[in-house]
Length: 151
Image 1 (cartoon, rainbow, N blue to C red):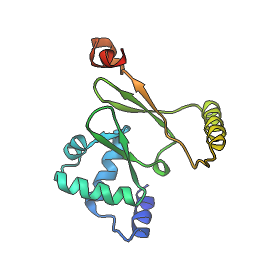
Image 2 (tube, rainbow, N blue to C red; image 1 turned 120 degrees about the horizontal axis):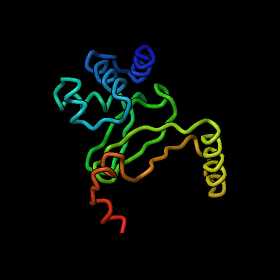
Image 3 (cartoon, helix red, strand yellow; image 1 turned 180 degrees about the horizontal axis):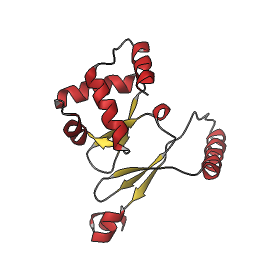
């Protein structure tokens, strides 16, 4: 993986510095999209350095932004470095977790996306799916913030 990241950065005219290597390692180990405060804590780098280096990694197609239901933007490794996956987004606590759709269902989803996009005169190059709801922890504690929003 690090070789692929280095190649992408080199193609973008950037170096694979130790700070960038640390950020890639943190995101790889996380197994889910992380907000900046968690990345800063895990990487042990100054927040300004994390922001700068994530911007470079994002521009090189190595990491991508994932929006949650809270004020935090999260980052994860982009799909060439992981398997294709989707996100579960908790409307109460903001947790964003990955989930993988089995191949037969993913193929069916892809057909739906392609068919509906074609009907709109659009040619898709991929898709991202975020499922909104409540995580197991918020369901078990009976958190009510999303209940009020859901009507």
